[in-house]
Image (cartoon, rainbow, N blue to C red; front, top):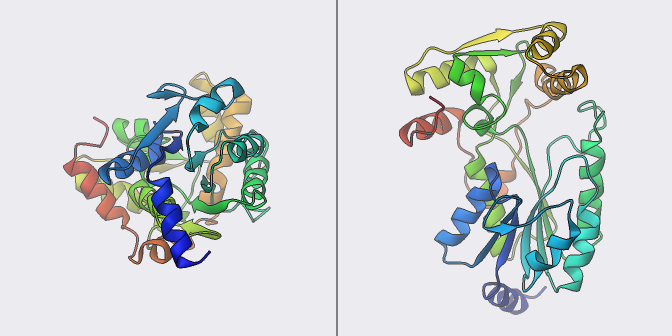
Amino acid sequence: MDRLGARQLTGVMSEHPILVTGATGKSGRRVVSRLRAKGLPVRAAARNGEHIFDWTDSGTWDAALEGVRSMYIVQLDGTKLVRPFIERAVQHGVQRIVLASGRGIDNPDYAKDSSGVFEGIVDSEAAVRESGLEWTISRPGWFAQNFSEGFFADAILAGELRLPAGDGAASFVDAEDIAAVVVAALTEDRHAGQIYELSGPRAVTLTEVVATISEATGREIRYVPLSVEGYVAELVQQGLPPADAEAFADVIEPLREGRDEYVSDGVQRALGRPPRTFAEFAKSTAETGGWPG
C-alpha cells in the first residue's frame, strides 16, 4: 500500500467505531481505554459489557460489525469461530484486523492441548492470514497481570502461591505493553503482516516473582513448588473435577519446563521501546491499588 493510500485508509477508519471483542478482559479493556484516550470511537463488545457480543451466538455478530473498519479479536478458547466471524466481517467492509493469539502456537511440543485451545488458535491465525484483509497478530506470553487480577490472584491474596512449576521461569509480559502494541497496530499503517511475539525483558522464576510482589506490596508471599500429582489432588479436594484439575496442571507445564523463558522482540519492534520489567509492573500495580487485598 502506498503512503498516501495508507494515510487515507487510516483517516477513513478513524471515522468508524473500532470493534474490540473481549472488551472486559485483561487486554481488551486496556485497548478500549487507550483508544478512547486518543479520542477514537470504540465499540466495546463482550457478553456482559457496553455492547452485547457473544461468540457462541452469531445473532450478535452483525450488530457488532456494523460500520466497523478495524477490529481487535480476542477469541473464545477451544473454538473455531474466528474464521466464520471474519467472513462476516468482510461482508461488512472491515479492512484491518488485529488478532490476539499466543506464544508457542507454532511449537507443537509447547504444551498439551487436550481441550483443543491450540488447534483453535492455529485455525484463527490461518483465517486471519487468508482473509485478504490488512492483519496483525499479537502473540503474548504469560501475562504479568495473572498475579494481580487473574489465574494466580487468589493465591497472592492468600499469601501462598502453590504450583507445580518447579524452578521454571517465564518472561512475563505486562498487559499494558500488550495493549499498547494492539493500539499501535489498529491505528498505525506500518504493522500490516506482522506477527509480534510479546514478552517482558527477561525471564523470572516464581521465587523472584513473589519476592518482587512482596517488596511492592509490603506483604509476605511465599512460593511453594508442588508435584503435579500433589497439585491435582489439592484442586480435586477443593471441588474441581479431576479432568479440570489435570487441565490446569497442563497449563503450568510450559512454565515448569522453561519453555517460556525466551525473550521476544515484539514490543521493541512495534513500539520502538523495551517492554516493562516485572518489577515495574509490580510497583505500578501497587501504586494504583491493583493488588488483591
